[in-house]
Image (tube, rainbow, N blue to C red; front, side, top):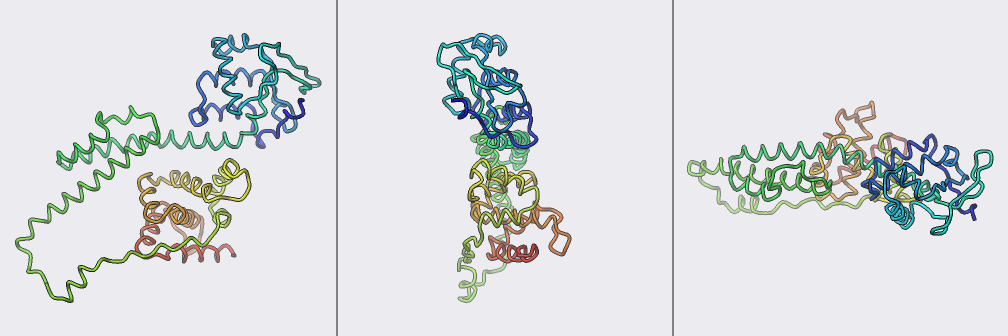
Length: 361
C-alpha cells in the first residue's frame, strides 16, 4: 500500500521548513485557516528532512490528542482540520477512523505507516510557490493601493467640486482604505477613484476654457472644413498576434522568464505553454516595474491582454540591451509603446520582428 504514497520530492534546494514558510505565506491564497497552519506546523515537526526527498514516504502518526495539545487546539478541531485537508487534496489519511496510528522507520526511512501522509502536499510545492509569490505581490500592492487611494481623495478634494466628492464618497464612504482587506476590492476602489478624478478634472479643464467662446473668431463653416472636422477619425484595426506563448518566453528578459517558469509549472503542468500563463507572468512583472494596476487594465482594454503582454515583454527585454534599441525605463517604454500601438497599429509587429532578429531568430 505504501508504494503509492511516495512522492517526487521538493524542488531542488528547498528544505522542509522553507516549504512550510511558503505555505504560511500563501495561507489566504490556499484558503487555509490559522488552525490548519498550526496543525501543519506540528505535522512538519514530526517528520524528518529525508522524508521530503524524492521516492520517500513522508508521513506522521501522532495521535489526535497529542496534535491538539501541541497545536493548542481542541481535538474536535483537529479532526475537522484533517478531514478538510484530506478532502481538498492536501493530505492523505492512511489510518482508519478511530484506529490507533503507528509506523516504523529503518535507517531513518519510513517503511510503513498508518497515519497522515504529506505526499499530496509535496506534489503541490510549485503551485504553493506561485501562491506565495502572489501573496507577497498582493501584500506590496495593498500598501501601494492604500497610499494611492488616499492621494486620489486629496486630488479630488482639491478640484473643488462637490459632485466629484460625492462620487468619490459613493465609492468609499468612510474614505479609509485600511478597512478593505480584499485585494480585488481594493484594486477596484483605486481604479474607480482614478476614473472619477480623470473625468472631473477633464470636465473642469473644459469649463475653464468655455469663457473664451465669446471672444473667439467666427467659425469656418466651409464645406471642406466641415468634412475635415466632422468625419470621425478611424481607429487602427487591431491586428492578430503573430506569435506563440513559447516564442514570447524565449524572447523574455531573465526576470520575466523566471516568473513564466513558475506559472508554467503551476498552470500548465510543464505542458504546452498557454497565453494565460504568459499574461499572469507578465502582469506580475509589470507590478515589479512599478506599473499601476489601473494603467495596465486600461491598456488591456484598448489593445487586448495578449498585445499588452507583448508590449511589456518587448520593453522589458530591451532594457537589457546595450545597442540603439536599449531603453532605460522599461515601464515608461511600455506605456509609450502601448499608446503608439493604440493610435497607429503595427508598432508591436515591427518591434517584435526587430527583437527576433536581434536574438538571432
